[in-house]
Length: 160
Image (tube, rainbow, N blue to C red; front, side):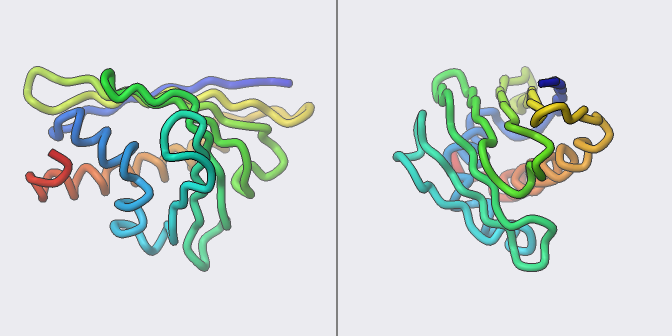
């Protein structure tokens, strides 16, 4: 079974703790409100939202996919780190067994932060993962981050 690892990072003018709270801790409430055209709902279907919990992301009608499930493996609130695994959903398309993610928010001297994201794609069977094919998904995820970042930038009191 082949695997491929990718990493990316971006700088944000928003403080690390605020982005972490909005994108990680409260995503199930915030994301569907900010992006109803893409995300219908995010439900915690197992657990309390912490380690071991499973979140189901339900995509909006008319989008390419229906749902995906993420298992939260590590939730380090003090160090602003979350590791989670996409374990189920039509986004995997029988080509990928799972995708493990690590998202880390680090404070910057200017009051903003750097968000570092690593992902490891585990192929299903003998399928060869093409890095170009997965760029689209990463671009959609980055679009979501940017929507949340813009909301926080325009709403200075949110998630303080």
